[in-house]
Length: 327
Image (cartoon, rainbow, N blue to C red; front, side):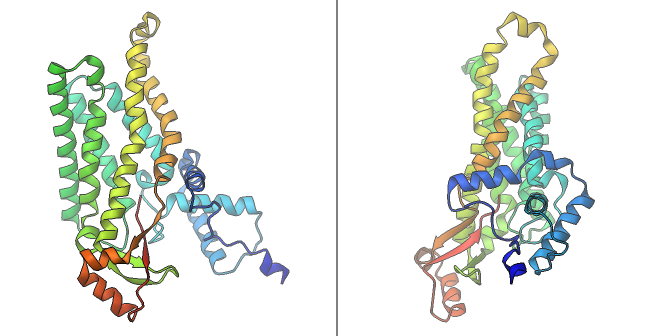
């Protein structure tokens, strides 16, 4: 009896995910950039421990802090739906270092068109990997759809970046021109994420009742989840890409700073990293990971899927259904 009472539930969140503060703590814990250097063998070892604990086999007994560290490694590197080891760029632990390097490059090298094109290409390539990796895995996407999403997002980012650059170079102050990268990132997010997850919008995603049982599909749930992800991604980038240009505009006028020409890109990259260490968990915590949808809205806007819901629940339709919005 004493052994049962000491079992650790590895599926139980360590933080209260119903509150913003709890979600912030959870994502700060899960996106810890220090775990990005952990080897694949160690990650697979953490997965084996989590799966063993799920089955009730908790021998040998580990200290709670050791179990929690293995849970962190598992949550940061494996897909929540499929359990597959995610590629390096798609891991949650890589969001701060990856975003820091790319955003620093976009902010430091924005003055020429070739530099804008190069950094937007790199950024959208990174975003495509992240969006695909953190999709709702129950909605498979074809290679053609992935290609269309990638090309469309990259094109939209380049059109926004080069268009804003050409227009603002004639109409706006040099300070305002520093916001070209943010305009491109925001425009691309509105294109990249919905296209990368278009199957979810077309076919709907699985929705569950409050007991976790799949009861149907919903396109509205997909639209709501993707919309929240778009807002989160833009919020993640906004402080660094909007505040840092103001800081740099002042710094670059100082004679002491201007004498050290090589410091510009490393300094901006470091500052972006400071912003992202706070903004990655903040943006991810804006909305609950498990979203909900009122079924009365489904009845109004997607009656055919609501009918399927009625059949699967034998007329006992829950008031709300729940789904994973992705990241």
